[in-house]
Amino acid sequence: MRKIAVVTGSRAEYGYLKPLMTKIENDAELKLVPIITGTHLLQKFGNTHQLVKKDFPSAIKIPMLLNGDSLKDMALYLASGISNFAELLNINRPDVLVVLGDRSESLAAALAAFYLNIPIAHINGGDVTGTTIDESIRHAITKIAHIHFVHTKKNADRIERMGEEKKRIFIAGSLSLDTILSASLPSKKEIFKKYNLSPEKLTFLVVFHPITTLKDKGYSQLENLLSILDMLKEQTVLFYPNIDAGGDRLRDLIKKYEDKTYLNTFVHLPHEEYLSLLKSVNVMIGNSSSGILEAPSFHVPVINIGSRQQGRERSMNIIDVNPEKDKILAAITYALQDTTFLKKIQKCENIFGDGRASERIVDILKKIQLNESLIQKQITY
Image (cartoon, rainbow, N blue to C red; front, side, top):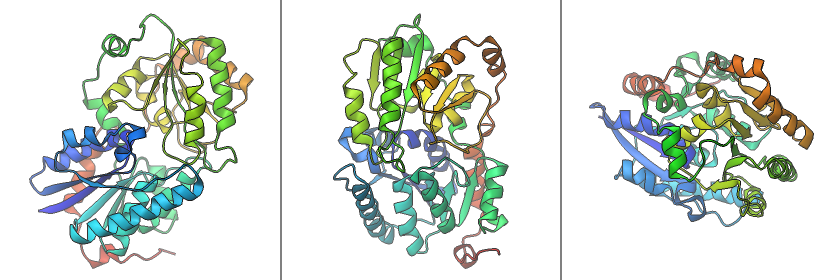
């Protein structure tokens, strides 16, 4: 029986991984080793390890130490993760380590496994996501990973151009669609009632994360967005930003608006509830990949601000705007009132898969040969 370790470092990413983890756990040929790390274990991000433990009681916790919000603190956060993962993986060696995306937690786990000659399966490589540190982390993981599960053919082609062997690359689709297309999500009436929202009111969903390569980490962009929201005073559901450097300043800025009656803020929600909200709002605004990957399935207009998702493949529901106030306001007006656009996005298709990514990944994890040739990589050109 193959031991498959799956690393989850945040609530958002766990929502994608949960269907895969469930399929691995239920497969007679595989043994799931769930690993909880990163922001799951940090109180200011909601202690979301409890959500994972509820679903997978045997999950192992690997802490990563975070002492601040600076670029140096993030580097030390990564270093602590590498050290702690090396200790655990050396004792409890899986046959394959699965990591997702472009976060520090995934890089820490992958680097530790790489030095221990543990095969690494990387999900979501080959993406292009603008000018943040995520872009470099994603490609770094690709170069040390041994198995690549990608969203689209374009992503597969990028990884092959990076010198990876074609036999290592598998087009699985996006895990984000597995939940959307298979789970029974709460209705708008149910989710709005639970969180004291009015279903009759126009509603915005806002998710805005730091932009680590900018000097102010996106502070001025969020400042502009919050100013527009305060002018409009429409019912707004706003999620706090992720762990990236600069996030504390963004959280402090949001707190200045928290007493506004139109604003409803959340640190996190269970993934199915978040998807229900996304499905039910009039417009999503911000710079989150959720707008790119998930919102198209619900035909929800997305105003994508700035460069954080620059270059990523996208569906027709995305409105890309520069972060100036007048541009943001114009985009909101367009998303709400342009009848041609609203009619067009009702036919929007999600280009990132068909809801069967977990099934494809499990099949490959069972069949792929785990030998020296898998570990011994060489660039193809």
